Image 1 (tube, rainbow, N blue to C red):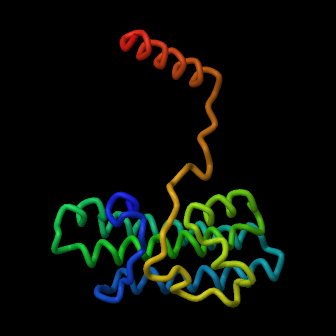
Image 2: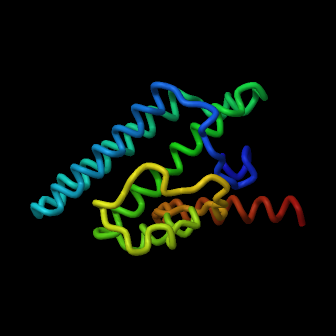
Length: 169
C-alpha cells in the first residue's frame, strides 16, 4: 500500500495522530520489552508469542483504520500516511527482532523495507519508535514466507497456466 498510495516513500506522520496510532506505538514498545525479557530468560516460545501478539495488534489496527478506504478520500491523506508509517515501523521492529530465530526472514523483511542499515549495531534495548525516518524509500514487496504448494496445487496451477497460454496462443 505504501508503494501504491505513497510512491514507496514513508512520510512524516506529524500532521496526524490518533488514539489508535498511539496505542499501536505502546503495544510495539511492550512487545519489544517482553521479547527482550523472554529471550534473556531463554523463553523463546514466549518471546515469539509477544511478537505474534504485536502482529495481531497490527492486524486489528489495519482493520480499524482501513487504509484502502482512506486512500479514496484526498482529505484523509494525512491519516493514511500516518497509518502506513505506523505499520511499516512495526514491521521493521518486528522484522529485526525475529532475526535471532529466523535470520533469513528477518533479512528479507528489512531488505524490503530498505532498513538493514538502520538496524545495524542496534540491540533490542536501543529500539525506539521512529527508526524509519520521514522520506525513507522502501523497496518493492515480495513474499517473506512464500506459500508452500502441494503437488496437487502445483498441478492445478500448471494446468491453469497451460489453459491461459492456449487461449492466448
